[in-house]
Length: 406
Ligand SMILES: NC(=O)c1ccc[n+]([C@@H]2O[C@H](COP(=O)([O-])OP(=O)(O)OC[C@H]3O[C@@H](n4cnc5c(N)ncnc54)[C@H](O)[C@@H]3O)[C@@H](O)[C@H]2O)c1
Image 1 (cartoon, rainbow, N blue to C red):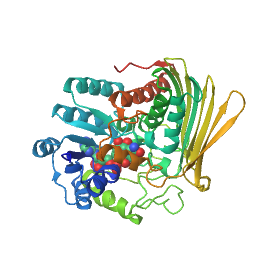
Image 2 (cartoon, rainbow, N blue to C red):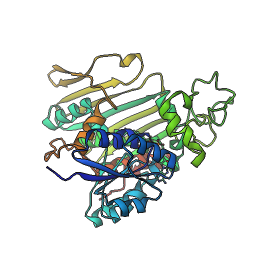
Image 3 (cartoon, rainbow, N blue to C red):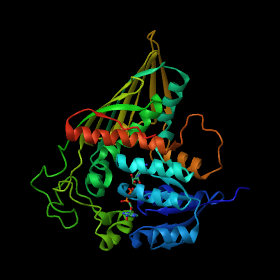
Image 4 (cartoon, helix red, strand yellow):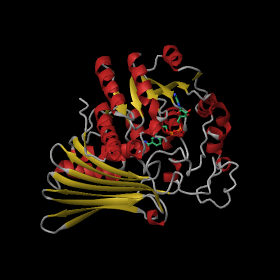
């Protein structure tokens, strides 16, 4: 039997709890051991500990590393600090599992890649969408040559008014914290396309607008709690109506002033809610990408056109359009024939992808990875580099060359 790997968690928010800490303790204790939790907010850290068998809580990150000697540090903090904890973990001789995005800008990405190379340790980015059944089927088909060499990809992603609005309520709404949705959110989507086409981005041009959130409405407050518009604002939320939101955020906010229900019409919002990006890959393929954060329901649609055919795929993720028992993907060949792949829907977080990734990370070690689903730091870097280049392109109005990360 293998010796269990020792894991320490930094960042005791909802993702740290639900994606990492609880599964480690509840499902993978034969192979893995959670040895410590650190978060600058001790209320959240203690809540995670209480839900995870009383795992030790530390008041300082470096003290946790010295006291627990983890093999792996899991980084699930707000995005702006990922690079900082990655560098400190590598310097302490630990491997790192980092939530997406790897980092929020080019300088941070460069520092991580240099530190990883120097340390001889390994950084893995937990891109769960590489484990979603439809995304996997696209990868398999492209890898099998079903549509030949990929020449053009269209990918549209639309967030709904609950999930999408959430990015405008809290830390994500400042570029300095998240890199905006072109880094924070689109890092998933750019990674998928990079993985599918197996190529590197060369040039990016982007547009970004703030059309729904931010100070677009006169009737606005500071936060939903105590807001005079609470009863008639369609974006109002009640943190106390949900036990997880109450325990992790409402009851912890006095410590650090982190409001989970900031007004989505706040002046300080500086990220975009409507984005379009054009990417040229080194091999010549073009990606046309669109993202918005205020759709009536959530979903995505992609087409990949290659030298021998085309894949059409997509799914609704919320609302009435999502009430279907299955997912479909169509492959069209140059003779005009079509093959429809019908996949049963998988229950669980992010279409079942969270559980599959957890099994890969924390379950029995698998020696092969035929679809290259585990994303290394270079994959994490490439997707951040597209988002960072898109942010620069929006600011300058010019196309931007993607900076090589290796
Ligand atoms: N892969 C996915 O599908 C997915 C889904 C949700 C979130 N995420 C990622 O997980 C991470 C956490 O997101 P979340 O939704 O749990 O956010 P959250 O706001 O619930 O939690 C973030 C935590 O970071 C802590 N933090 C803030 N500053 C810190 C610092 N300097 N040092 C250490 N900790 C600090 C906060 O106190 C908080 O507990 C983000 O990087 C996010 O992108 C990924």
